[in-house]
Length: 596
Image 1 (tube, rainbow, N blue to C red):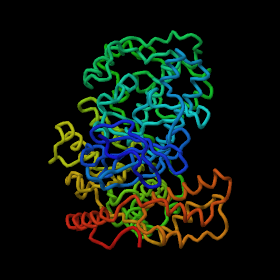
Image 2: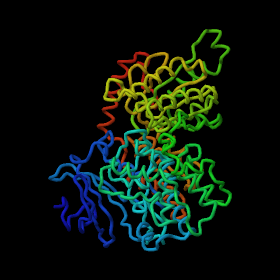
Image 3: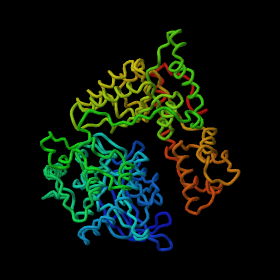
C-alpha cells in the first residue's frame, strides 16, 4: 500500500499513481494544474539507510540534485519535507522524462551505427564532465539510465541520480548492491569510485551501442544474485580478451575503446576532457601500448585490474600564478593572520633566519560546509606564489594492503620535488580518522604514515593546509604542533562578505546597471559562499536562456526560491564544536577568524 494516495496534493501538484516502491522510497507520477506530468520521489527517513543521508540528516540524492542544472541530466524542480503518519519524509520533484531508453534502442536496433553511437556518447560525456567539475561522480552509467529525450529531440539525459556522490576510496555513500556490474570498472568492486570509473562505464556503454552487448559478455550474470557472486562472474569474464571485431568500427574509435576499457592505469583516461579531445579527432588516436591488458592478461598479472594498482599518487600540481587573495570576498582577518604569521616567514627567509623563526608546518581550516575552505587554500598558494596540490581521499585510495601508504609517501615526495608547495587535503577527516574508532589495522597504518610525513614537513618546503567539516573525527595526534601548527575556524560569511561575494560573482556578466548588492546581502543572511555562487549562476542561467541582462528583480526572485544549505541547528552544532576545539587547542584561543 502506497504512502500517498491518488489525488493527494503536494505543493501545486496532484498525485496520479504510484510507479514503484521499496522499503524506504516510493516514486509517483504527479501533475500540475495544467496537467503537465512530473515525477515525485518520496523517502521515508526512518527506513532510509544511514549511508544515504548526509551529516545533516538530508537525503544525499536530493542535496546533490539541488546543485545540478545541465541539458544532459534530468532536472530537479523542487524538494521539501512532509510530516506523515509514517514519520518524516523528504521528497524531490523532477521533470517527467519521456522518450526511449538507450537500452531499448540498442535492443531493437541490434547495434547502432558508429556516428549515432558517438553522438550519444558525447552527450553522456557532457553530463559527466559537468558532474565532475562539481566534484560529483555518477557511479551508475548504464544503457538503462540514459534516456533519449523526446522533448529535446533525442538528446541523451542521465535519469537516475540515486548513486551520485563525491569520489570515494572504500566506503561509498550509496547502496552498491543494485549496480549493474557489467558496466562498472573493476576498481569499484573494492569501493573505489572516481572520474576514471565513470569514464570506464561510459566506454562500456559505447561498446554496448556499437556491438549490441555488454563488454566481455559475462555469461550467467544474474541481476538478482548477491553482489559478491556477480563480481566473480564479471571478473571471470574479464580474463578473456575484449572482442573488438565490430563491423564498421574505425581504427581510431577502436583505439579509444581499448584505452577507455584498459586495466593499466597509465593508459587510462584521467578525465573527460581527454576523452573529448580524442573524440574530436579519433583518427589521431594511437593503439595503447598494453593492448593485451584489456581483458586477457589481467589474471596473470596478479589481479591488476584496478586503475590504482601501483603506489603512485594521482594528483595534479598547479604551478604558481593567479590573483591570490584578491579573488576572495571578505575573510580579511584570516588573510591578515596568514600574511603576518605564515607568508612572512615563508617568503622572507633572510629575516626569518636572522630571528631564527621556524617555518610553520601546517594549518587546519574547519567550519560549516560551503564556506570556501578549499578555495581559500588554493588562493593562499597563489598569494605566496607556491605550487599547489589539491588532494582528495580517492586520489590515495588503493585496493591493495599498504597501497595507500605507498601513495601517501609518493605524494609528499612529489610535493618536496616541486617545493615550495602548498599541499591541501580536502575533507581531512577522511585521510586521518581517529584510530580509536572502528577502522581496520591497515587504515591505522595509513594514519601512521601521515604522522610520519607531517613531522616537520616545512623543512622540505611543504606547507600543509587541511580542511574539514568534522575536525572532531580527526586523529588527535595529527593536530599537535610540529604537524598541524594552526587550527582556524572559518565561519559563515557576514553581511559585508556576502555583499563582496555578489559583486565578485556578478563581475563581467551582462547585468543591468545599479544592482544593489547590499540588499542581496541582507536577503541572504545564513547563506554560505557556495549558496551565493549558486544563486548567481542560477540567475545567470535564467537570463541566458532568455538572452537578457541579469536584473535586480531576477536576482531577488532567485534568492526567494533558494534555501540556505546549512540549517540553523547545524550552525549551533558548529558553535559548540568550535568551543570544544579551542578548549583543546589554546594556540588559537583568539577572536572569531574569517568574516567580521
